[in-house]
Image (cartoon, rainbow, N blue to C red; front, top):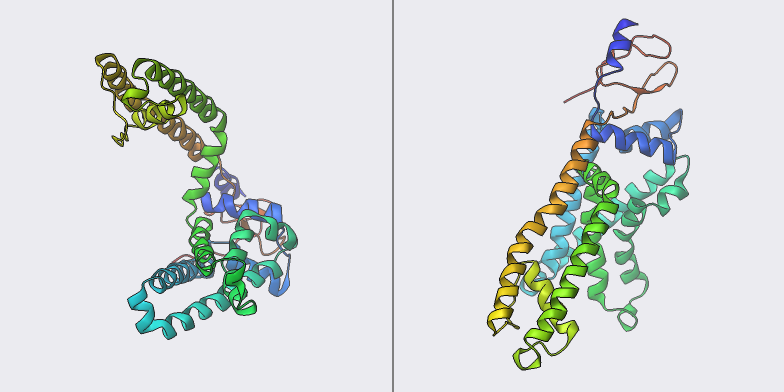
Length: 302
């Protein structure tokens, strides 16, 4: 029991937090084949779970490569049959994976409506649309269907769990970022208006919106060069905006970095389950269940 108490304070990983949230939101079956499938698909701490994630990541990357190659005319002309066969192979594979995800959850509709559920659906629907509606080009260009297949790359965000930390940091700092962006908008609006007055239409600043466009490109240090100040006052203002832009670009980076530090230092929750009492939330290095005290089997690792 002491070992169980000691392990309760151990820090946990982002993937464990993500899996815990999946359990709470979509529901984990308690027994049977659905529980086994759930463990493979949604619990990345197990050996089979990690193997599944790695194989699926490889499938996503290869399928996206197939879509990219199919857009190259010379490659498509020579290997079109193989590319089509691979596209259907991956479509069927992702269809099986999507159905398995829905089948092993207690609340499949919630998952289907979630961000990753929609992405999973977008990864397979375009190929079927092209098959069921051969004349779909009348309603929508085929290239758009091919573009939708690229959404498969977003499936990677559910397997690279650092995305979770970044997403949490962005959500936590959204108000600070919005306030910062509103300040930047006020600055570019005011300085753009000043440049319209200083330079005028004769130097390309034909309207306030055009001047604001110039202010944005200058503030972000892009400087397309299609509009440039000609007067000394205008160049002085432009120089100040460029220097100000360097400082402004560092602000959101500091905000997000601070929030990411907070997220990483927060206590995370594990998804390890006791095989006897089915208690969830056990730590990776726990030797005993903190609920019933039964000795836990070693966690399978590579």
